[in-house]
Image 1: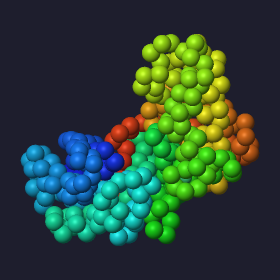
Image 2: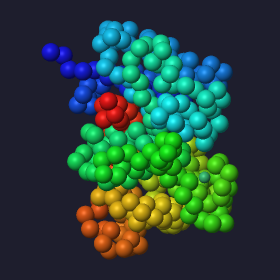
Image 3: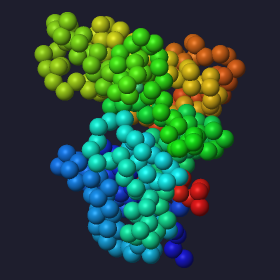
Length: 316
Ligand SMILES: [Zn+2]
């Protein structure tokens, strides 16, 4: 007998990833489509519904052979209604999208919707770095700072599915303004965007300390590659890691996790995880450190897609 097959969709601000996933979390077939091609004039949900039809047809399956659809989506997601109820960024025609209702009406397949950061945390727990752990704090460091909190094997969703927005923990009370309207948020200091901004400023103030072509496309990789030879840069990166650690220290004290999983491009740098881990260990109360691991994420870009299927299976 054939194993069950699920359709996972991860909707981000630029692209939607599609995957057929089996009940063990293996991705059998996948593809990716732009959702921002006309600046969101075509609503993302419309694009995704059309591409769903195309993707399933191209995989050779019929919708009747799909046991459920799991959608991981950017923004504030009401998981009960399966609807987008808010967006921290500025994506046109997105808030108000009734994802669950539209999918179930069009394809008659049970559909669940969960925020992408929460979904990524579940993906890591299912088949990634968090396999076998029950209490996890997952943090993704990228353009922003996202997160998902797993308590006793369950993702913490809160009243409307909005929990886990750890990018908006305030770490500097009179700090810089954030896109959420508040000041001093973790995201404003601990994202890769924030690091690039600080490094770019440093480079303008000290042009001779950097190679000529450094300012073009500054990114995390470039910064870490340049670290060993540049003490000014090391100071800026150290401050950045300090800020990340402030967020984690609070989370460890609140949730007492066994594991903190760090995702995003920089998490692949061993020296980054080591320094971060050291800073957390210096400031967390000793009992909270017993058995605490700080590790890089394993699934990369597939975490959201896979995690949505885990959530779907768990909530049958
Ligand atoms: Zn904020």
